[in-house]
Image 1 (tube, each protein chain N blue to C red):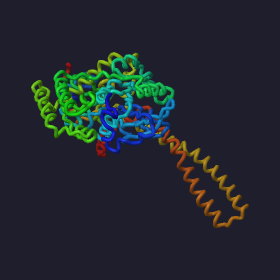
Image 2: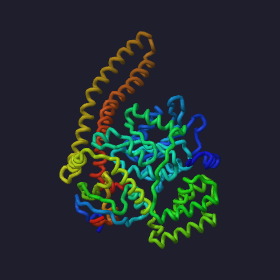
Image 3: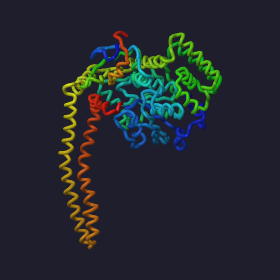
Image 4: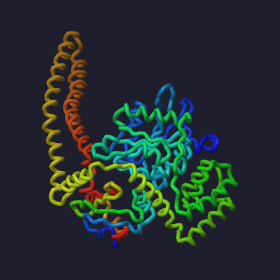
Length: 428
Length: 75
């Protein structure tokens, strides 16, 4: 059963992974590609206010929160968004380490309904590590807008794991998610992921290494396969963290070294060089994603993306791209500066009126001149002036900017201005 | 030929990625595998990053990076 306490031993874990487990019944990991609404789901389930934002990588460490559903206390762990857990950046490492070694009771993988194919990659990679997976197809409202229909039942059959459709912004849709989570945690549903079968030569190598691993260590079969895959892949950082977290020594074990070398030689004979191995693995996964998507996604309106593209073309064209951007910004600034005058004025007069009353009150109480002038003309007046001047522009500017963000205009600006950004030396 | 030589709105197929490990890994994650169809659909005003449609999503890649992606016309 994947990574359970009995298969790995909780005492083997580094301290940072073993947190807060005590007072909750089940631990749920929330994984997914960047920008698919993980944090929104997390916030809506836990009632917390983790900052959500429309850019990738905004969650850089694991955030945790509690969610009570039907008298069961779930501890949710919001994992940084990653496209893959083959790991090359810090957040991918955090994500991978948690899914692998944090042994959550189940892992929810949130996928974007509007580009399922790319998102399934992570699902399959996670399947190699653990069985207890729930796929949560989020942003169904966006997909509906784009006239993309996804056959969730079929997707569930193809993947072998439960699939739930949600629209994170609507809390109601999350109930069915929690329902499934509970069923998986209590083993009412047992996911049986249909893992990717790799190229024949890789599979042969895998089973060879698995056999040796099994003889050397007591491991569950899923874990064995995953470690074998990483050994073939010769991924140093992952091997190191396997060694550290499961306290087993792979690189010093002669038998394992020998079999790994043997497999590498075999693969090379069949033109699979170590350097290109990852290409083979990833393309096998991608092909599987492609076939599944072909079966479950129905694009009801082929023209939709074409219409989108047309707008994009204007927004990023040589002639209009930058003028439109300047115009947008000019309008926003104009609205902010001019628009905030009125509420500012109103606030000024309101605060002025209150000040007058306060002065009367001070007089009435016979407070000494120096005290009332310090408190009222000093503290009160400064404070209210700052509020009257600063609040209206902020209350106008930020919502407007949020609208631009929601429209997806900001990535277009980045696209237009990439050259400038690069010159300012902020690459990527 | 490289991805930079692919004219706008013409479909090409990825042949191989000839770049350093880190970029390669990222590209693989995004679905740039051998045989994947890719179409340039947008050019930025300064003509440097171009946006490509691949696997139903739009991804912008700079010329310096696109240079390492070899493509051909038939899968």
